[in-house]
Length: 454
Ligand SMILES: NC(=O)c1ccc[n+]([C@@H]2O[C@H](COP(=O)([O-])OP(=O)(O)OC[C@H]3O[C@@H](n4cnc5c(N)ncnc54)[C@H](OP(=O)(O)O)[C@@H]3O)[C@@H](O)[C@H]2O)c1
Image (cartoon, rainbow, N blue to C red; front, side, top):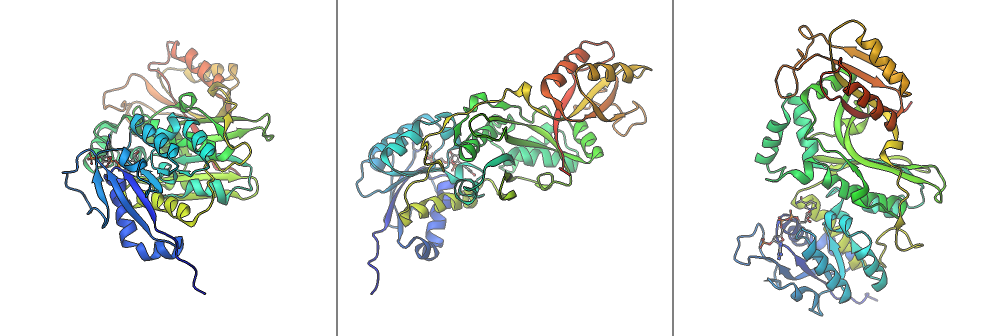
């Protein structure tokens, strides 16, 4: 006997820009494949825009209409799912609260909204037993949300580390492979559409921090407020340090990282942040080039899992949004945080940045005089820092000619130190002491180092 066919799943989409256009194209072009997997048709009824007269990248789907009234999405009894693809925080928050309140499932690609509003929307969705899906919000087309929530659900996650922002990765890749200065690489990224006119969210690490907060919630079931993450962007990265890093066998990447410290859920803390990091060239993360994203997750049972792909763009991001919609169409119950007990994440126990430890790359511009290295080594030792490698460049003959990142002649010569694992507190204290010393001519540069484990 043939199974009765389910009614189509009806969508109201907020926004008809880059991601919504990709979604509409995928739902139209892959309709048969999606029907075979979802078991029912997926149709668009309304699309919310600011300017209905604007030329669109794709046609409004058959049977759908544009609207400028938000209420047309959540007040329409035919609409099952509200898909928020407009961006911003305040208006989408209002839209999703009203939609959940009206009994609609919601799907969003908006990481800023979910990271900045904490548990608010998750609490409402849990209370109403509705889907709040956000695969597209973390690394666009890479299915990292589903991987953490479902695929790795039987693991205790130990670390997460990833290239979570394509714009920054593109800029650092161009600086590294073509020797460009930061400003030049940024202008090129803007000309190619990889960076916004105002690139602050991307280059200062804020977008990566939004995604990291969502990943931490999925990995450990805790709420780590974005505002508490230690975040450092790439605008200060100089070609000089990129070149020195290469000489040691490293690439500089903007990494979001999080690590469980201790192994018992009750007394464990989380060490997390976003920062430029030297990544050893033997690691897959070092080879992620251009505007790509990647995430490495380590679980106690599975070991290391590496996901790589496009973190943005109409079709990759639309693919992730469509996957969330298909899950809802199949009729599975909501699994928004990946945790059933407790359904809502409690506060994370945050390890303060000064208590974290790693290897460090340090560049000092020092006087080219006898005894300098001995004095610096003494300050390092006083602060519990053990030096693994040191290189001193000579001003005239060195391959970098003693130039600062902006091309001006730098005072002193570069002294590059690679440390063994050290506490950040000790490193910062040593660097403060050295900054005040007469032999160090500029504020020291320092980055953590990600090495291949033996
Ligand atoms: N672009 C990507 O590759 C990407 C990747 C991952 C996640 N995301 C996230 O996806 C979301 C959408 O990004 P996008 O790049 O598609 O944005 P976009 O191209 O700027 O499109 C935004 C759309 O939302 C509509 N809109 C904005 N504010 C509105 C308002 N107050 N009332 C009615 N309509 C409004 C705009 O209408 P008009 O067209 O009429 O102005 C436009 O159609 C953002 O949260 C973004 O962070 C994007």
